[in-house]
Length: 331
Image (cartoon, rainbow, N blue to C red):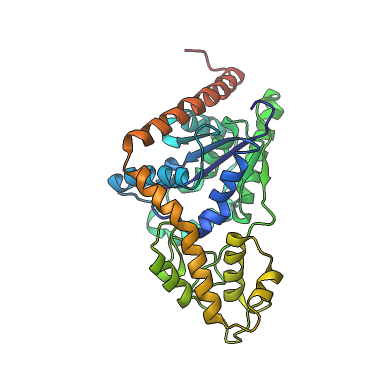
């Protein structure tokens, strides 16, 4: 375990995991735990940069945990924990705030985007949460951080802060590298395939939740926006069909060219029906396992407490090292 590279990743407990979340992140989490030493967190501290209903947030945290386990996270191979249970995240965030420049935080594109969509609540946490994200990563000496292209800027900030701190105090933090899964498809909205699939899409037909019923999945795929050509192949100005081809490819493992040949002479109707059915069948075991897990609160508590103990053991050692370096007196 010690000779494996270390991974840190997290997902916000916002209630709905889409197939975009699954194929873009969680499926990758499952495969990475076979090769790496993985710490996965339910990032509830990050979620409060926008207003949350406390009761719903609590339910969403447990739901996110149950869904992660249903998708294949193994508590005997990975630590999975609730971020707010590890106080070292907040403590290290405060220290690292002193090593983060206002200018570099103000250049974060996600802050600009989130501020534009959240004008009534542009709070300080929305501005500084990349520092908390840096604390998340550095606490666990992460070598690799799985990210999409939209998060790469935040990893660069984490690297800069770690290098800045190490330059003053010596070799304290591991310098993290972004883990970009080059072959992984980016799943787009079914209603507007020029945009990434998002659970916040106002059009409910734009995304598919992992836990949706078969009929709903097939109906949404059938309604998905496509061009008028009617021929199944991956090409320019075919964003809708390209998206469905990538979803189908993620499930069955065929190349785009193989899929083109499979549906030669068939139209979009046949293709959409096949994609919907294959996707629904693929997700069904996850939905069944989730329903079993979410009904067993005692087991979920056992899982997050076990992961929390392991995570705290790592995080506390890192924080002690930091406190010693900056001159804080031991308790």
